[in-house]
Structure formats: C-alpha cells, structure tokens
Image (tube, rainbow, N blue to C red; front, side, top):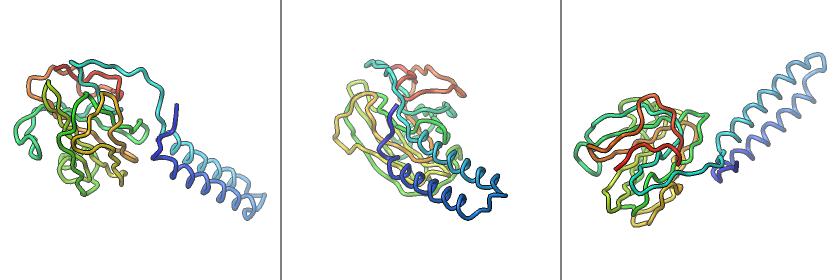
Length: 218
C-alpha cells in the first residue's frame, strides 16, 4: 500500500494537530482528569488514522481487456438505468453510478484505453452524492474517452463532504485502461455512461473495486 500524493498535505496537518493538541492536553489538563487527556489523544489519533487510510492506494492486480469496461472507482453500485445524457451525447445512454463512501479508496481510473475527446470541469453545489440533482448541480467533471469500439463518458461528482475534485487528463491525451485520471476528496460518486445495449456485469447494491471489477462488456 502507498499514499496518494493528494493526501500529503492533509496528513501533515493532521499530524501537527494531533501532536499539538495532545501536548496541550498533557500539559494543561490536571492529572486527576487523565481520562480527558487520554480521550482527546485517542480521538485525534483516530482522525489521523482515518485521513491516512482515506488516501491509501492498495496494491492490486488490475484486470485488462479490450472488450472489457473496468470499474473506474471503489464503492457500491447505486444506479443502473437508461437516462438522457445532456452535456455531450445529448441522447439516451446506459448510466451506471458508483457511490464512494468516506472509507472507500478514492482513486478514479480509466475504464478503457483510448483518447480523451472531451474534458470539462464544472463548479457547483455540494448536495449529497445520491441526490437526483447531484449529477447536474454539484461540483463535477465530465470526461469522454473514445476508441475504435465507441465513446464512453465518465462524470466525477463531489458529495456533501467533498470540496475538491482532482483530475489529471486533458483533451487529446492518450490514456490507458486502469490508469489514474482523477481523485475526489472525502466522499463522492462516479457516473459512467455507456451505449445502449451494452452487456452489464453488475447489479445495484454490488460492492465494486476500481481497476478490478468488470462493469460491462462491449
């Protein structure tokens, strides 16, 4: 396991906060109230530990295949439905949504290899990630990857806790399957829009892993 570069600043801040407050508690809270000092120190340790775990990148054996559409994120499948995609395709597509809780890995990966045909960042609100309007009103990015099998669209959506979507690709970039295209801090959702008729390999409620779970086949 390694730590994602987006987490370095937060881990340093959490470490300094933990040590400073623990030192203050030990020096300014009377010994007779030791339980208060111990409780404060333990709570701060749990916060520090959660931040470290949040930015983890676990070691994985990635799944590859030109006919496979690999899951772009860890989490739970919350939506599988035909819907109208209004930003890029402007027609009906098959939408699969993966909700990432604060305890999931938050690296976002390319489900296929290809060329980035479209990339746009949108400022927005911070509705809870499962809210019906979060995909059109929240802070989000839209990414379209194309290859000789067709185009698919990915949408990073910030949740109520998230305040920063990170993305690392631009239009015309050549990307590889399972390569990292982004990261969302502290709770979020990723939508993927596929051509109608795509064979789906998951069901609502399934727990999925980015780079490992095969969402669908062309």
